[in-house]
Image (cartoon, rainbow, N blue to C red; front, side, top):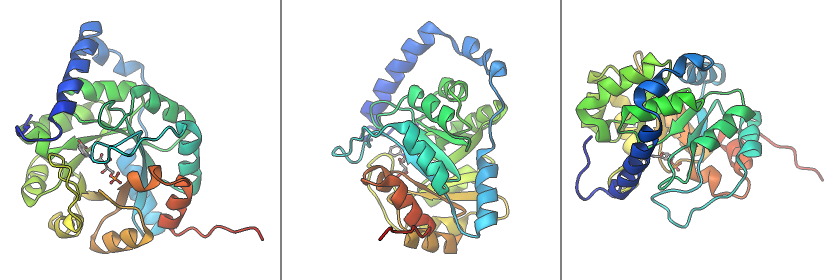
Length: 274
Ligand SMILES: O=C(O)c1ccccc1NCC(=O)[C@H](O)[C@H](O)COP(=O)(O)O
């Protein structure tokens, strides 16, 4: 793992490492791996986004459920996940991202299991992944995809991608710089998420998606855009540069009417009663 000393992610990783040590003391990697065969087959996350893009001709939307955010300490949500996930699916989200990391994103594997029981669309487990154990945990909790940060994993990226694919999950590789785009492509990524946010400083740099997406070959890679997005204009603008999906979290979760925001992004007209 590559973790600069000044990374704001550091305290969260220290805590996550501690949780993982406890989880491994209870059940080893070998033990949890042995359980994967008992799990139902995953629902294709990449495939669902590709199909939604093809059907709609505009970027699909991955709606993210999270209880908080490391870059916005004022953001805490207690919205019950089951009805929220059902609403997102009914409105037209092609897939959902569910935070499973406790300290930074205020999520849990139990949140993921709740959402898995509520909807039929595929799910991404949103974690800060630096240990192969987390990939198997995500699979056993019902996730169909995991986010792998090129910045954090560095030369381990290919190994983590392969491990996710080996348990039938779609690895989505997160990038924020031209060098990370290069590293993702060199690691064989066919599914890349360009983020406007620097994961070490938490700084939002609007325009990163527009600058980096054109560097990615569209015939080989399905591209997702994320970070500070949440309007129909974002969808149009990023669709025009080649994004096939947007991942939207804060703009939905901070609003009093998350499904209403999703409707606006998707351009769905709602009838208003007189
Ligand atoms: O993925 C990470 O490891 C990560 C670490 C630190 C900060 C952000 C990180 N990922 C980005 C997210 O998970 C956001 O939730 C996602 O981009 C949605 O962004 P937003 O719509 O701005 O909430």
